[in-house]
Figure (cartoon, rainbow, N blue to C red):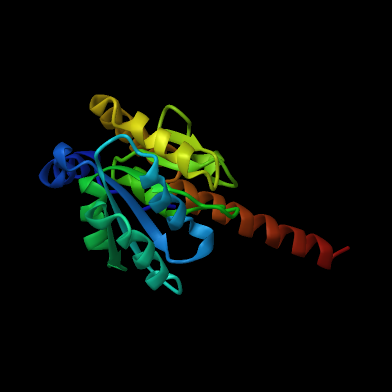
Length: 205
């Protein structure tokens, strides 16, 4: 599940930190091949929109990511890993969050954190991302590993600021409806109860 703050509180937090003129495209994730940060940075070659890429990351490929980002000067900022309370400020400042995974993923906590902070996602059309993200409703899909297609979706996102806000609010409602703590706990208890029932029935067979 994804911890949720009340909608009014999230809106006030976003309003406090968000400046549409900043045009921040955010990545949050591990500095490793599978998360695809390199795909996002490479998309800078194809972007038509003037925006800033912020990469919050830590891990084995941190130096490599910094080196790649340096090629684009101040257009890409790499920030070594931050605690969630500081990362949340960047969620609020961002116009959109990119999840450019190149390997199969399932739950993808970053995606749900993004939704919980009322921001839309541009995500790889791969694995579990396809389960929780709704194309054109809470974000956009792009072809995994394709920086040109990713750049096109980023450009699309910035064409309509009002739509970005609407999608962010739709994203929050989706987490609120499908990934809240009460729903998760109930499902987990059902699994345990089913497992115990099967065990008891097997023991008496």
